Length: 462
Image (cartoon, rainbow, N blue to C red; front, side, top):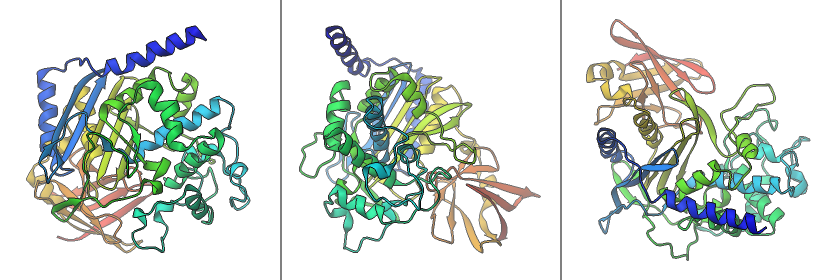
């Protein structure tokens, strides 16, 4: 036991040290990153903090913009932001720790812990919750029959009971559908199995052991130094984000943190401090659905391909804030961006992808080279005859393209070019969505929309 204690002391003491000494990027790459962040930030948020690490060493750690617009306080790299759904990876690891201890199993049913939880005769397993394949609808989409429900402190069990009364959307394990309900329920199970509250479990078992001194479960009365003010943007103006109670977001989105703490967190995972290697590998493996198809989600992370290599990533969006964290295990590159603004369909994920490309020694996306002539050929209105939906492509003041769907599911969504004709949209329901224009005689005549399914939109007007 003494040897184990000494080893843990050495490892825990080592992680914070990694965040202190920075390795260096070339002056050219550093300049490119600075210019990219300066150019793109205004369209995303008042301020941001960005950290990039390579081979376990921080190579870039800077902040831009304003932490408080009223007081004109600039963002510092050590400031604390809400991280939204990045919370889910903490919840997943906490649950997996309990699995390793034999206190709960991935094959256990949700009904074992919440008696009478309906499943249409189907078993909903813990793994279904972790992989977003349970079929349980998102509780944040439910109608709350009280004014301003986000301001109320809700007992956890009350939300659980609200979730359990909703019918399943599909057979568990048959489909991926991102739902905050899955991770809210996992937080509740962590409490039932461990005997600790969710915030206390994280503090005792994760935050304190690896030295996350600026990561907290957000409480209304807590004093959290260097906390950044969040903002929402409507039309062309920012306003201070409304007060919300984190009891409604809980284990699906209730944490706040810093870029350096998130780096320490990723290092602790990478070094096998919080979970066994084989457990983490399973968490980083995309889940196979019942029909044999593979989703792009593991246990609390999306697993995708970025520039030809595996990308372990997740984003967050919560009142006043957005976040994005990307880890390339084979390249040992970690990029995290925290933003204190939220507006519809911003492209902070695309911005972080661009940062990864620069670190890999590649140039930024072709959209930086798509001139006005190419942009103008795509502007117009397109119609899908099958669903009688229209899609309007417009040119933004910054010269980029944006699209709006007539069904209201997306407005002014910025398009990020992958080639002269292929563009990526901000993720809709966390699903990768692309638009590819078909050009004839120098003019777009239709576009191909690809999400879960493929649809064709014919151009009907300018």
